[in-house]
Length: 385
Image 1 (spheres, rainbow, N blue to C red):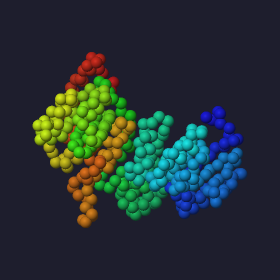
Image 2: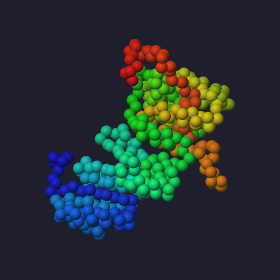
Image 3: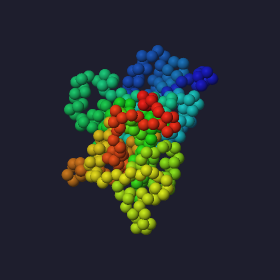
Image 4: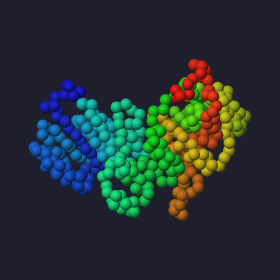
């Protein structure tokens, strides 16, 4: 609290850390800091301590995160974690957050994205958390490099390397990803944001129903007459019974128009003589709409066609979107080429469920058709959406 703080006792202190302490000397950043300090009357640069003493007792302290425990017990008004995706040490929150607690200090994560790491997680979190902010600054946005420098980088780096280093792409390292570029576009167009549940629109669910592995469910609303698809929620669990998912659906409090499950949901099990569709129906899950059996490649193309029309709730769909980014083609090590089939791993369930909706979901309503009626309020104004 600035009103209660005794600045004489505890003057402002900024801590700027790189993944390793030695990087300050190796990269020349400390040399720049010393030159900057020399231009400030009364400032003192202490190289042995990587510390700049500023007038009024203010301090700029540099260092590394290769030994987080060395910071324990200190305080800071601001901690800048530079190249956050390259930090390998664990337990950072237990060290950094207490440093900031005394004066409700600020924590900044900066750097070049390295896939779905710490920067991606914090960037997503800042998009829906009050009091947080985020900035994605590509070379086009800063003007820091000349056209000649950019052209040289384009010729020396691969397209993915350039996208990562110069355009802050979170998906560039995910080579072979089916959907990462489309999710980047959704991010750039602000279609990953807060997307609240609209009670006057029904919800449909898209499933990948696992037997011995995870079950994934997307929750979607379609805006009448627009083709807009609102992905409002996502759920995933492993090793749970069908009753668990039936209870989960009720707990969401949504009004459902369809539950879209894979075509094999109709297959009867040898032990019970019942299909999973019949068992879900007995638990109150209705109406169930089994899908069509189509080649995986066709489903992936359908998902690619659907994604440009999707709006995602940033918080509730974060886990599902992360899996969509990670869904990728197999790499043939011997031939050094991408294969035609996707890798089956933890990302597959969310991707398979999304593909189910893309292939078997209802088509958008005719724009000339009258709007549906609200069971709660009578007629509604479609422009209210």
